[in-house]
Length: 73
Image (cartoon, rainbow, N blue to C red; front, side):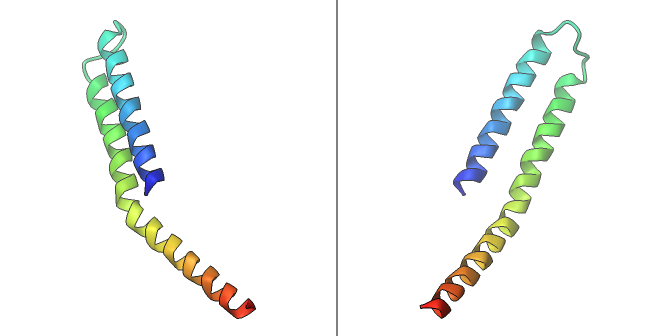
């Protein structure tokens, strides 16, 4: 969970940084900020959509490891 929050914060920081760069750049087009928002929003949404699956996978691996430890002892 902490990793997901950290990645989300890094994506948000990258979005803010690139958005500021696009606003200040004379070479940026009108659609630059929209495209930056769509890309970073899509990445953040994808990460949040996959996080329950990643959690269930980690939980399953932990249960298998615990069952393996119980057989050894």
